Image 1 (cartoon, rainbow, N blue to C red):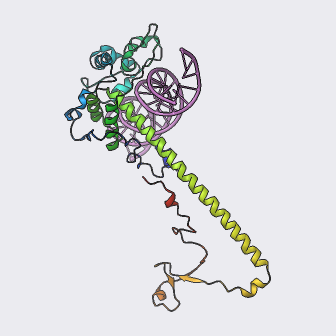
Image 2: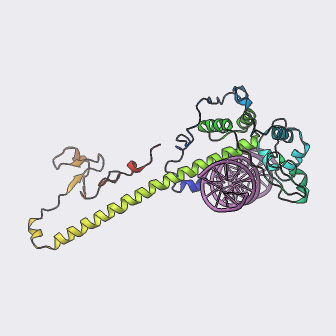
Image 3: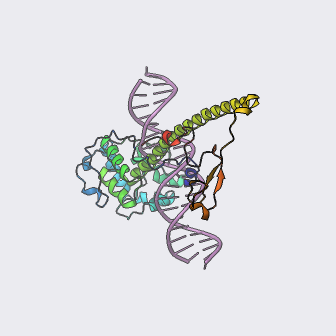
Length: 281
DNA sequence: CGTTGTCTAGAAGTTACCTCA
DNA sequence: AATGAGGTAACTTCTAGACAA
Protein backbone atom coordinates (compact mmCIF):
# COMPACT_ATOMS: atom_id res chain seq x y z
CA UNK A 1 0.00 0.00 0.00
CA UNK A 2 1.12 3.53 0.58
CA UNK A 3 3.75 2.33 2.92
CA UNK A 4 5.57 1.31 -0.18
CA UNK A 5 6.11 4.91 -1.05
CA UNK A 6 7.60 5.57 2.29
CA UNK A 7 9.94 2.70 1.87
CA UNK A 8 11.22 4.18 -1.31
CA UNK A 9 13.60 6.49 0.33
CA UNK A 10 12.19 9.13 2.52
CA UNK A 11 11.91 6.78 5.38
CA UNK A 12 15.27 7.77 6.68
CA UNK A 13 14.16 8.34 10.14
CA UNK A 14 10.45 7.94 10.18
CA UNK A 15 9.18 6.63 13.39
CA UNK A 16 11.15 9.03 15.41
CA UNK A 17 8.50 11.50 14.67
CA UNK A 18 6.15 10.70 17.40
CA UNK A 19 8.83 11.26 19.91
CA UNK A 20 10.10 14.55 18.74
CA UNK A 21 6.65 15.80 18.54
CA UNK A 22 6.52 19.47 17.72
CA UNK A 23 3.63 19.83 20.06
CA UNK A 24 5.66 19.30 23.13
CA UNK A 25 4.64 22.70 24.33
CA UNK A 26 1.42 21.21 25.47
CA UNK A 27 0.71 21.58 29.09
CA UNK A 28 2.11 18.78 31.10
CA UNK A 29 -0.54 18.80 33.70
CA UNK A 30 -2.50 16.38 31.61
CA UNK A 31 -1.51 13.00 32.77
CA UNK A 32 -0.77 10.20 30.40
CA UNK A 33 -3.55 7.87 29.56
CA UNK A 34 -3.10 4.36 30.80
CA UNK A 35 -4.06 2.16 27.91
CA UNK A 36 -4.88 -0.82 30.00
CA UNK A 37 -7.67 1.14 31.56
CA UNK A 38 -10.59 2.85 30.06
CA UNK A 39 -10.62 6.53 29.35
CA UNK A 40 -13.57 6.96 31.56
CA UNK A 41 -11.41 6.21 34.51
CA UNK A 42 -9.27 9.23 33.94
CA UNK A 43 -10.46 12.17 35.93
CA UNK A 44 -11.09 15.77 35.03
CA UNK A 45 -11.34 15.74 31.32
CA UNK A 46 -14.88 14.68 31.40
CA UNK A 47 -15.69 18.28 32.07
CA UNK A 48 -14.39 19.48 28.79
CA UNK A 49 -16.90 21.48 26.94
CA UNK A 50 -17.15 20.31 23.44
CA UNK A 51 -16.28 23.27 21.35
CA UNK A 52 -18.33 25.30 23.73
CA UNK A 53 -21.44 24.37 21.90
CA UNK A 54 -23.55 22.48 24.34
CA UNK A 55 -26.50 22.23 22.07
CA UNK A 56 -24.27 20.72 19.50
CA UNK A 57 -23.17 18.10 21.88
CA UNK A 58 -26.65 17.11 22.69
CA UNK A 59 -27.53 16.94 19.12
CA UNK A 60 -24.46 14.94 18.38
CA UNK A 61 -25.17 12.47 21.06
CA UNK A 62 -28.61 11.96 19.83
CA UNK A 63 -27.58 11.62 16.29
CA UNK A 64 -24.88 9.23 17.20
CA UNK A 65 -26.62 7.02 19.61
CA UNK A 66 -30.28 6.96 19.27
CA UNK A 67 -31.29 8.18 15.91
CA UNK A 68 -32.60 5.57 13.57
CA UNK A 69 -31.66 7.86 10.77
CA UNK A 70 -28.06 7.60 11.67
CA UNK A 71 -28.17 3.93 11.06
CA UNK A 72 -29.94 4.45 7.82
CA UNK A 73 -27.51 6.99 6.68
CA UNK A 74 -24.53 4.92 7.46
CA UNK A 75 -26.07 2.04 5.66
CA UNK A 76 -26.86 4.05 2.63
CA UNK A 77 -23.71 5.92 2.05
CA UNK A 78 -21.33 5.29 4.79
CA UNK A 79 -21.97 1.79 5.88
CA UNK A 80 -18.38 0.96 5.50
CA UNK A 81 -17.53 3.69 7.89
CA UNK A 82 -19.84 2.67 10.64
CA UNK A 83 -18.94 -0.96 10.31
CA UNK A 84 -15.31 -0.23 10.39
CA UNK A 85 -15.68 1.46 13.69
CA UNK A 86 -16.11 -2.02 15.03
CA UNK A 87 -18.42 -0.69 17.64
CA UNK A 88 -21.44 -2.26 19.11
CA UNK A 89 -24.80 -0.60 18.77
CA UNK A 90 -24.73 1.17 22.04
CA UNK A 91 -21.27 2.46 21.51
CA UNK A 92 -21.53 4.71 18.59
CA UNK A 93 -22.88 4.64 15.16
CA UNK A 94 -22.17 8.12 14.20
CA UNK A 95 -22.77 9.60 10.85
CA UNK A 96 -20.73 12.52 11.95
CA UNK A 97 -19.71 13.36 8.49
CA UNK A 98 -21.33 14.79 5.48
CA UNK A 99 -22.10 11.56 3.87
CA UNK A 100 -24.49 12.81 1.35
CA UNK A 101 -23.12 14.12 -1.81
CA UNK A 102 -26.42 15.46 -2.78
CA UNK A 103 -28.36 12.52 -4.07
CA UNK A 104 -31.95 12.66 -3.22
CA UNK A 105 -32.18 9.36 -1.42
CA UNK A 106 -29.57 10.49 0.97
CA UNK A 107 -31.52 13.54 1.85
CA UNK A 108 -32.55 12.23 5.21
CA UNK A 109 -28.99 11.73 6.35
CA UNK A 110 -28.25 15.31 5.84
CA UNK A 111 -29.97 16.03 9.03
CA UNK A 112 -27.13 14.20 10.72
CA UNK A 113 -24.43 15.73 8.66
CA UNK A 114 -21.04 16.70 9.85
CA UNK A 115 -20.85 17.58 13.47
CA UNK A 116 -24.42 17.84 14.27
CA UNK A 117 -25.74 19.33 11.17
CA UNK A 118 -25.51 23.00 11.77
CA UNK A 119 -26.52 25.20 8.93
CA UNK A 120 -28.35 22.69 6.99
CA UNK A 121 -30.55 24.68 4.81
CA UNK A 122 -33.31 23.16 2.84
CA UNK A 123 -32.94 21.50 -0.51
CA UNK A 124 -30.15 19.17 0.53
CA UNK A 125 -27.55 21.87 0.63
CA UNK A 126 -24.96 20.83 3.14
CA UNK A 127 -22.32 22.87 4.81
CA UNK A 128 -19.83 21.41 7.10
CA UNK A 129 -19.45 23.40 10.20
CA UNK A 130 -15.99 23.18 11.48
CA UNK A 131 -15.54 22.93 15.17
CA UNK A 132 -12.43 23.94 16.90
CA UNK A 133 -11.27 21.47 19.50
CA UNK A 134 -10.71 22.97 22.87
CA UNK A 135 -7.21 23.34 24.23
CA UNK A 136 -7.76 20.57 26.70
CA UNK A 137 -9.09 18.27 24.06
CA UNK A 138 -6.18 18.93 21.78
CA UNK A 139 -3.69 18.55 24.59
CA UNK A 140 -5.12 15.25 25.67
CA UNK A 141 -5.23 13.98 22.12
CA UNK A 142 -1.63 15.03 21.69
CA UNK A 143 -0.60 13.24 24.82
CA UNK A 144 -2.40 10.15 23.71
CA UNK A 145 -0.85 10.36 20.30
CA UNK A 146 2.59 10.50 21.79
CA UNK A 147 1.99 7.13 23.32
CA UNK A 148 0.11 5.52 20.49
CA UNK A 149 -0.23 7.06 17.10
CA UNK A 150 -3.00 4.66 16.25
CA UNK A 151 -5.99 3.59 18.25
CA UNK A 152 -7.97 0.42 18.29
CA UNK A 153 -11.74 0.80 18.22
CA UNK A 154 -12.09 0.41 21.95
CA UNK A 155 -9.50 3.02 22.69
CA UNK A 156 -11.08 5.29 20.15
CA UNK A 157 -14.48 5.04 21.74
CA UNK A 158 -13.10 5.42 25.21
CA UNK A 159 -11.10 8.45 24.25
CA UNK A 160 -14.06 9.93 22.48
CA UNK A 161 -16.19 9.43 25.52
CA UNK A 162 -13.59 10.94 27.72
CA UNK A 163 -13.21 14.01 25.57
CA UNK A 164 -16.86 14.29 24.81
CA UNK A 165 -16.23 13.87 21.15
CA UNK A 166 -17.44 11.34 18.66
CA UNK A 167 -15.33 8.34 17.80
CA UNK A 168 -15.23 9.59 14.26
CA UNK A 169 -13.80 12.89 15.40
CA UNK A 170 -11.11 11.11 17.33
CA UNK A 171 -10.37 8.92 14.36
CA UNK A 172 -10.14 11.90 12.05
CA UNK A 173 -7.95 13.73 14.49
CA UNK A 174 -5.53 10.83 14.63
CA UNK A 175 -5.51 10.49 10.86
CA UNK A 176 -4.75 14.14 10.42
CA UNK A 177 -2.19 14.05 13.16
CA UNK A 178 -0.36 11.17 11.52
CA UNK A 179 -0.43 13.05 8.26
CA UNK A 180 1.03 16.13 9.90
CA UNK A 181 3.72 14.09 11.58
CA UNK A 182 4.67 12.51 8.32
CA UNK A 183 4.73 15.80 6.52
CA UNK A 184 6.97 17.26 9.16
CA UNK A 185 9.26 14.26 9.00
CA UNK A 186 9.40 14.50 5.22
CA UNK A 187 10.48 18.10 5.51
CA UNK A 188 13.21 17.13 7.93
CA UNK A 189 14.33 14.32 5.63
CA UNK A 190 14.40 16.68 2.69
CA UNK A 191 16.59 19.06 4.59
CA UNK A 192 18.93 16.22 5.47
CA UNK A 193 19.14 15.03 1.88
CA UNK A 194 19.73 18.58 0.71
CA UNK A 195 22.67 18.86 3.06
CA UNK A 196 23.99 15.53 1.82
CA UNK A 197 23.82 16.74 -1.75
CA UNK A 198 25.62 19.93 -0.84
CA UNK A 199 28.31 18.01 0.92
CA UNK A 200 28.73 15.63 -2.00
CA UNK A 201 28.87 18.47 -4.49
CA UNK A 202 31.51 20.13 -2.45
CA UNK A 203 33.47 16.89 -2.17
CA UNK A 204 33.14 16.28 -5.87
CA UNK A 205 34.50 19.71 -6.59
CA UNK A 206 37.41 19.11 -4.28
CA UNK A 207 38.24 15.77 -5.87
CA UNK A 208 38.05 17.16 -9.37
CA UNK A 209 40.44 19.87 -8.37
CA UNK A 210 42.75 17.32 -6.83
CA UNK A 211 42.62 15.17 -9.96
CA UNK A 212 43.42 18.16 -12.08
CA UNK A 213 46.42 18.96 -9.93
CA UNK A 214 47.65 15.39 -10.13
CA UNK A 215 47.30 15.39 -13.89
CA UNK A 216 49.28 18.59 -14.12
CA UNK A 217 51.94 17.14 -11.89
CA UNK A 218 52.10 13.97 -13.94
CA UNK A 219 52.72 15.90 -17.10
CA UNK A 220 55.77 17.66 -15.71
CA UNK A 221 59.00 15.72 -16.56
CA UNK A 222 60.68 16.01 -13.19
CA UNK A 223 57.71 14.32 -11.55
CA UNK A 224 58.71 10.84 -12.69
CA UNK A 225 62.12 11.08 -11.16
CA UNK A 226 60.77 11.79 -7.70
CA UNK A 227 57.87 9.38 -7.78
CA UNK A 228 57.99 6.48 -5.36
CA UNK A 229 56.38 3.27 -6.53
CA UNK A 230 52.90 2.72 -5.21
CA UNK A 231 52.68 0.55 -2.16
CA UNK A 232 50.70 -2.63 -2.43
CA UNK A 233 49.11 -3.71 0.76
CA UNK A 234 48.16 -7.29 1.32
CA UNK A 235 44.92 -7.94 3.02
CA UNK A 236 43.58 -11.14 4.43
CA UNK A 237 39.99 -11.59 3.23
CA UNK A 238 38.95 -13.65 6.22
CA UNK A 239 40.22 -11.58 9.07
CA UNK A 240 40.30 -8.38 7.03
CA UNK A 241 43.67 -7.33 8.34
CA UNK A 242 46.55 -5.95 6.42
CA UNK A 243 48.97 -8.80 6.29
CA UNK A 244 52.71 -8.88 6.66
CA UNK A 245 54.42 -11.34 4.32
CA UNK A 246 55.92 -13.35 7.15
CA UNK A 247 52.78 -13.88 9.12
CA UNK A 248 52.01 -17.51 10.00
CA UNK A 249 48.38 -16.76 10.02
CA UNK A 250 48.39 -16.09 6.33
CA UNK A 251 49.75 -19.43 5.41
CA UNK A 252 46.25 -20.70 5.70
CA UNK A 253 44.48 -17.60 4.42
CA UNK A 254 45.00 -16.21 1.00
CA UNK A 255 45.82 -12.51 1.08
CA UNK A 256 44.66 -10.20 -1.66
CA UNK A 257 46.11 -6.94 -2.83
CA UNK A 258 44.07 -3.89 -2.14
CA UNK A 259 44.19 -0.42 -3.54
CA UNK A 260 45.19 1.85 -0.71
CA UNK A 261 43.49 4.80 -2.39
CA UNK A 262 40.07 3.36 -2.20
CA UNK A 263 38.40 3.77 1.11
CA UNK A 264 36.80 0.64 2.49
CA UNK A 265 33.06 0.51 2.53
CA UNK A 266 31.69 1.97 5.69
CA UNK A 267 34.65 4.19 6.24
CA UNK A 268 34.25 7.89 6.37
CA UNK A 269 36.04 9.36 3.41
CA UNK A 270 37.39 12.86 3.63
CA UNK A 271 35.02 13.92 6.29
CA UNK A 272 31.93 12.81 4.42
CA UNK A 273 30.16 11.77 7.52
CA UNK A 274 26.51 11.75 6.56
CA UNK A 275 25.49 10.59 9.97
CA UNK A 276 26.62 13.94 11.24
CA UNK A 277 24.17 15.58 8.89
CA UNK A 278 21.28 13.49 10.08
CA UNK A 279 18.84 15.49 12.10
CA UNK A 280 18.89 14.58 15.75
CA UNK A 281 15.61 13.96 17.40
C1' DC B 1 -3.60 -25.09 -1.70
C1' DG B 2 -4.80 -21.18 -4.77
C1' DT B 3 -8.54 -17.94 -6.04
C1' DT B 4 -12.02 -14.67 -5.28
C1' DG B 5 -14.90 -11.50 -2.83
C1' DT B 6 -15.67 -8.75 1.24
C1' DC B 7 -14.39 -6.00 4.99
C1' DT B 8 -11.39 -2.98 7.53
C1' DA B 9 -7.84 0.44 8.72
C1' DG B 10 -4.82 3.66 7.27
C1' DA B 11 -2.55 6.74 3.81
C1' DA B 12 -2.95 10.25 0.59
C1' DG B 13 -5.14 13.89 -1.32
C1' DT B 14 -8.82 17.38 -1.21
C1' DT B 15 -12.27 20.55 0.49
C1' DA B 16 -14.08 23.85 3.40
C1' DC B 17 -14.19 26.42 7.45
C1' DC B 18 -12.01 29.39 10.83
C1' DT B 19 -8.65 32.60 12.61
C1' DC B 20 -5.52 36.11 12.30
C1' DA B 21 -2.45 39.46 10.43
C1' DA C 1 -14.58 45.90 6.51
C1' DA C 2 -12.20 43.06 3.19
C1' DT C 3 -8.94 39.79 2.11
C1' DG C 4 -5.41 36.39 1.65
C1' DA C 5 -2.68 32.88 4.00
C1' DG C 6 -2.19 29.27 7.13
C1' DG C 7 -4.01 25.77 10.11
C1' DT C 8 -6.87 22.01 10.54
C1' DA C 9 -11.38 19.34 10.87
C1' DA C 10 -13.85 16.66 7.84
C1' DC C 11 -14.26 14.25 3.73
C1' DT C 12 -13.25 11.00 -0.46
C1' DT C 13 -10.66 7.69 -2.70
C1' DC C 14 -7.44 4.12 -2.97
C1' DT C 15 -4.81 0.23 -1.30
C1' DA C 16 -2.94 -3.58 1.52
C1' DG C 17 -3.93 -7.09 4.56
C1' DA C 18 -6.97 -10.36 6.85
C1' DC C 19 -10.37 -13.63 6.51
C1' DA C 20 -14.06 -16.62 4.87
C1' DA C 21 -16.26 -19.21 1.19
